[in-house]
Amino acid sequence: MRHFSLMSLLSEAVNAHRGWDRQWRSPEPKPSYDAVIIGAGGHGLATAYYMAKQHGMRNIAVLEKGWLGGGNTGRNTTIIRSNYLYDESAALYGHAMKLWQDLSQELNYNVMYSRRGVLILAHNTHDVQSARRHVYANRLNGIDNEWLTPEQTKAFCPPLNISRDARYPVLGAALQRCGGVARHDAVAWGYARGADAMGVDIIQNCEVLGIQRGPDGAVAAVDTSRGRIATRRIGVSAAGSTSVVMALAGLRMPLESFPLQALVSEPVKPVFPCVLMSNAVHAYISQSDKGELVIGAGTDQYVSYSQQGGLQVTAHTLDAICELFPQFSRMRMMRNWAGIVDVTPDRSPIIGTTPVSGLFVNCGWGTGGFKATPGAGHLFAWTVAKGEPHPINAPFTLDRFRTGRLIDEAAAAAVAH
Image (cartoon, rainbow, N blue to C red):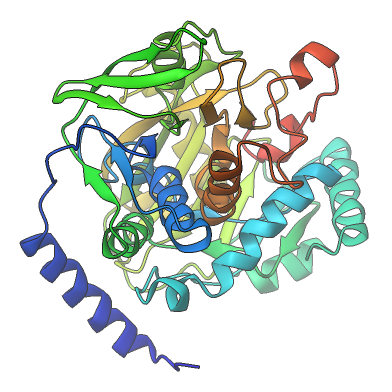
């Protein structure tokens, strides 16, 4: 087994990134592929990687309207955790968490996974009851989670204000110690480099304009801005644009798209040791390796494809952060942005088959997309390659909206949407 030091991993990752970026260019699409993945974000690239490595499918194209990792993958807040409530979610996110642990070694590329712990604050009786319910449910499923008193929470996160006079007093917190953050663009580039090395074509600036179906109703080809590509398997993994892409095949998805905002501060020396989230105040915070405070908000209250979002959401979030951490009130904010998240009625993803033969979909992750990246790619690769869901993602099908067997994870979002 190879052993890595932090500096050697970082140096290797930077050099590999620069070298590959300098030498690699998007190939011209071939007339036909065994499978086409729509979306070159973390999920799409991970899917192609695992299809090539574990299922021996090398004649694959990953199509991207813009540039590699330039969608939601480049706009998220890098948080990784698996402390969701229901058994189905525990299996899904727990599977992803196991893959995160050794992902840098798997890809031979430093994704900068930092296991620093994720705290979810409780500010009232309902928060306490909900958080403890999550802790007990997680433990039953073998998921790391524990309850902390306000004093223990302060000891774990010293900058936190636990004064009883605060507008949102801290009554305790749920802590997942194995949670943390990773570098989002490194995840995309690591999977892209690995897939490319196994012969996968990653085609940027290639917009999907249509999905053609044969006489049998199954998919037959993809029309793109760079020509038609024949294929009998299409996997759609285009966060924020899933409804638009699926409409090309005549399918209407149970999704709504919302802007999800975030911002970063000026860089400072290390002052924040963990990831901290608060549902009641709709804010979460961590510190990046560059020293920026990475701050996220809840989704806007209206559907939109805007990548800016409403200013009032940002203002509310900053007010909340300054109440929880008064010492940050003098810091300057450097930039803000929004990603577009697809949300299902039960706030759980859809990952599986569709009524159209040969068409598969991975969508509806809401705020859970990045943290699921390796697990989602691994399971979606199985589904596309074998034409049927893996046992772990079998409950997350489109059919659950017909049968009513929903997986309602709204409370587990930690910043509600």
